[in-house]
Amino acid sequence: MTRTGAWIQRGVAGILLAMVLPADQATLASQANPDSSDLYYLVFLRPNPARTNISKAEGDRIQAAHMANIHKMADDGVLVAAGPFEGPPATITGLFVLKTSSLERAREIAALDPTVAEHRNTVDVHEWRAPKGIGDEYFRLHKEDPGMPDNMQSHPFCLLYRSTAALGTRDRGGEGRTHGEYIERLRAEKKLGAAGNVNEEELIGVLIFKALPAEEAEALVRMDPAIRSGALRFEMYRWWSADHVLPW
Image (cartoon, rainbow, N blue to C red; front, side, top):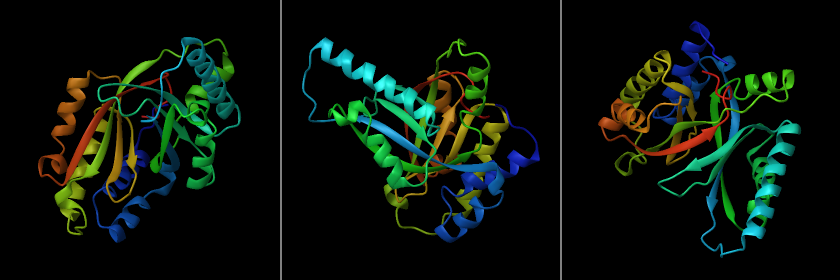
């Protein structure tokens, strides 16, 4: 669902400024307009290095159970988005975006997925402060028309990390402001579907582009002032998601 107006313009700058500001300033930035953001949990499904070859029948059984679990999480109201990743790199196989009570609860829910329980995947779970409304329009439309097709789309998906040189530093305030302004510009130009702060020591943010060509999205990321200065580094993926999931 598209959100417009000064309400969201103030909010996105606050969310993204927190990515590279010092911790005390980041808290203030992320609270600049709390009504524009929400707390989600990103669950990255990653290939288990110990996975062994299995038969097609066994793979089909696990995949069917995996899809049934996705539908159950959605019915339970904890899953707001999901979809597979397309490599390279082949370090993430899929994503769940959860709304639940805590990071620990998100890990418990993720561990119940059949691909995890049967040791095909491992999980990597992170708090994500991102725009309100992820999944809202999708579920509203599908409630009105249960037969509505998902119309899966491939979205460039960017993970932002502090660079090795920037780890432990606390003087990136200026870069944080220019970074936040640049991300707001991408949103205003309708390049982004969602973006937000992870606020960990290394992984600090996620940008999900609209269904753009991969080369265009990567070029836009490389133009980010915090990337150009070396304060941040990035990894690019392709994420398949149903239409109407992303709020911007």
